[in-house]
Image (cartoon, rainbow, N blue to C red):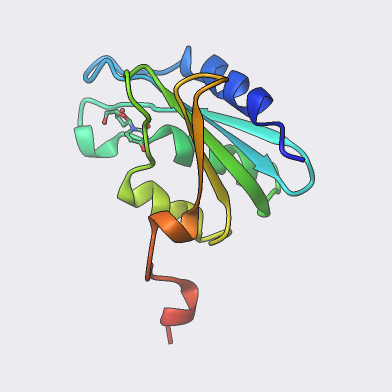
Length: 131
Ligand code: THU
């Protein structure tokens, strides 16, 4: 059983460290590995805007750095009023590791929605396409 509440609380904690002086839009992410570990990420902006890294990719990079590549779910929270969905680059980035991963977009611990990545990224490019 995935503990969505825990994932959302952890993502909210990560969001506190957001470095977002340009947008003032804070994002936090928590990825759960199939082995039961949690890794966190937040958005890290840059004066060269295109160099900004989203929270989701931050979290996945932390997990991969620690040797994890099998992911069950990722929760995303933000300082915005509405649900924050992963951007296109993040959908593609996440799909590298699991096309069936659950994506939890949350306003708070009580208000969240669950999707599969398949639903959010249809006909994505993947390693099988490189021949
Ligand atoms: N952002 C994320 O961290 N994740 C997303 O999926 C959407 C956008 C960040 C990037 C930037 O720091 C800020 O939100 C505004 O775009």
